Structure formats: C-alpha cells, structure tokens
Length: 272
Image (cartoon, rainbow, N blue to C red; front, top):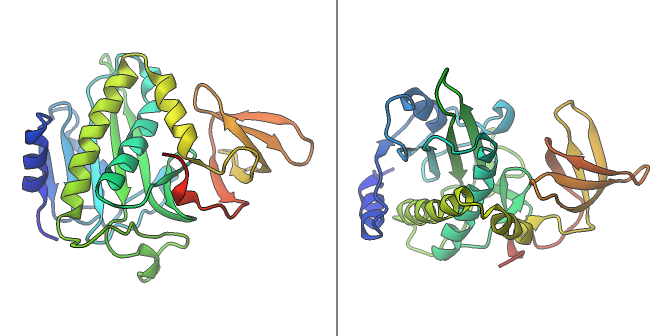
C-alpha cells in the first residue's frame, strides 16, 4: 500500500500532536520492530507497517495482517506507576473506537480483555508488552491492529470469526485518517489515566463492553480451564466478574479471555 505516514504527520501537526513515526511497507510485526528500537527511540515513537507477515495477538496467536489494514505500535514514556501498564490497553481500545466513529465507521464494541468487534466479528485487537530494563523505569509498547482493508476471513487460511471495518468511500486514506484520529485520542486518554482519572475511562469501557450485564459468556483462564456463566460487570480494577453457571459462585477474574458470547445482541451498536 502507499505510504500514509506523511498524511498522518500532517494531520497530527495541525493538532500540535506530532511525534516520530517510522513507516515500514512490510515487516514481521510492528511489536518486534518497536521492541528492537525501544532503548534508543524517543518516547511516543510510532512504528507502523503496511503489512505484517507474523502479526501476533495475545499468547502468541497469529493476527492476520494483509495490506490495507492499520498496524502500529507505540513506544511510550516510562510509567509513573507500573500498575498503570495494563490499563493502557483499555485507553487504546477507547481511542480506536473513537477514531473509527470519527472516520464514519461503525461503533466498535469491546470484548474483554483486548478484542474489538463489529457485530460478532473480531475486527481488531490490542497488545501490550511491558519492558523492565535493569535499574531503569518500566516502559510499555502498546500495539493495535485494525482490519480496515480486506476481510481477513476471506484469505487463504484466514481466521474464523474475523471481519473488516466498513468505512464510507473513498477508501484511500482511511488508514491515515483513522491512525491520526486514534493517536490524538490516545494522547488524551493517557493524560487522563496518568492524572488519576482511571474511573472515568473504566466507565466508558463498561458502556461499550460485550456481552451486556447478565448475559451468558464463556471464559478461558490462563490455566486452560473453561468457565461458563453470566457476565456481571467489570470490577474497579478492570477484572471481569462472572457468576459461574454450575454452582452460582461469583468469581473475579484478573486474567483470561472471553472465548464466546452466548447471545445475539448487536454488539457493534452498544454504547455511545
């Protein structure tokens, strides 16, 4: 695809939010590239690619990354508090939701802990890596992939359950528009997060999360256990609260992932 970096920087400079941006037509993973540059790159540096050959999601899973999508990773400033690291993923998901809406696309829904949906189809995901250099402050690489191009599920060996984000024509420049809007929105979310406004961000996540409260859901824990029950809410720390189906026990899950939604509500239209 054409290099959108100039268009992105032009849009950002108008908003006084310019930052270093590295554009790679094709790479294995922007997360790999950002990690390799983290020790010397300026905070806020963005690594962006037109295509990833080994894009990845949580737990090393493959993230289909054909030309036309948005794939970027950011090298963030050292964290004032290490426990903020995982909350950055929520902030990035909210920024992506806002950017797609500004570009004329659908409202994205959020599936705990890091997926973005339109309807029941996964159209994007967030990935975080915490870097802890010896004797230095912790830093985070925040990555995101959004399917703005062809539907990945239609590719050979494409992932099941994937989808693409429909934006109004013309499609040219969509990556630049969404990326610039998302980076600006992300800056605002991070400022709120780092100044003690986490409850406000969490409430916004609650408004766009699926399934809705009381709906059935299936969770897979890091230990490989599968849990069925009703989603009750997100805890104040972002953990998922589940009423387990078999015994009715209320569980607070700090880690894991939603593997299926047991309802048919229009997930892409949830929230504001």
